[in-house]
Image 1 (cartoon, rainbow, N blue to C red):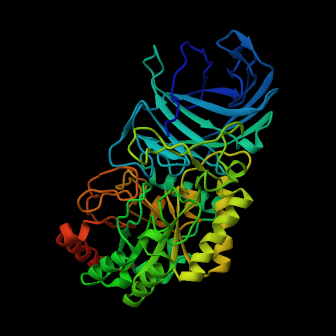
Image 2 (cartoon, helix red, strand yellow):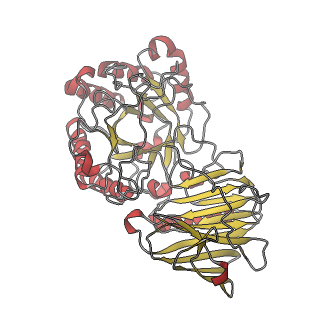
Image 3 (cartoon, helix red, strand yellow):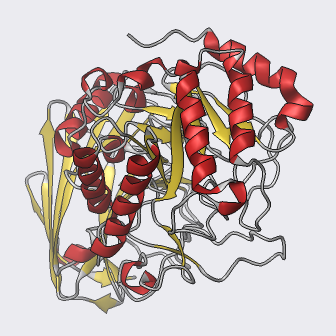
Length: 525
């Protein structure tokens, strides 16, 4: 998805206020569903380190009744902004603007080794920002929010200005939008060593979202701690093209077992249910792959060898033609007026997106019940060991059915029914790692994270299903051909090896080599 990132075509002439004992200056903007406004300097009342102001004027032209209270305090060496807003219209966002901070050299815990330079933006929760903390030369920023709500960090140089501006935006949850808004504390610390501040931030996150260190998690089966490799066995494409039948998947596993102990391998099955995404959310072994009997035989043979089996389910995906209740469950935008689409793939190569793909919220009771019963049936009838929920990491501020609450409830219900069942997700961020101990790393995201403990302290990742197989095919995914990911050991990350139809006939030596390298990986204590 493309996130809008534009500048105004005029200077809003925001009044900036100083921070005592610092070169930093700050301003505030308030946004409702219909307009945005800054503070009115004429009505600003300095009070100690804070400001009390009438809210205010847009471009020094249009007045809007309201009130903004800003407190700027010191806490253990950090400057802390507390912002409270009252407006006659519901508040959709509040922006804190900071001047006097670096434009370049920024990084977040999950960004790569290269520093970020203006302009850039990070959006929490999602692929770009795993937890709302960031640092640059000599400073670090932390947003201490006890809820999962959209937070944006944007660093840029305003038009016609030589001075960079750091923006921190808070968006209250759409379901709770009101004429009053209290922004969670925004903390700025000047320090040469940001790592202690990051640890302090992570300690807050643990308390806020119920994160448990990896070593103490009770939702991690013992076999996962020994797993060294994930094998992706691609089934049936959206078009109906079959990459591997269930017997061919079993053949691939037998080959893998010759080069690594099967107990150290998790077999992941996308497209096992028939036409990938087309058949969502109907989950039963695909007839063209071998049906229920063929799937039973695959699971039985895999277990006899020592492998674990993880089929894929659409955590939110549905074909509107297959799911008549999609309107009740479809993800909505923050006003609830239109359907949000996580993506719109061209599955058949006609250079246009397909028209019936929708995405539903697990927070909607009916769709969550469908997922729960679908996973339960496959576990009960076929004895699989794990389930991966596709697109679970894509957060949308749906005012009808909160997404994260839905996944929390779904996970709790499944674990109560099936103790020991591993639940995995596509994508991760801090609070989501409390729900899913294993996730597929975001496709295209940096793996060499600046502070990997933001993940590895709590959870593990594996490669995305679209990582190229030997030969480059992405199998059931819509990305066509991609090179395989570099086979470089990374803490907390399980390498992935994909199989399509020609993988063994043409690339057996490469497959064997990947397996042998994974076999040298030491099991976790």
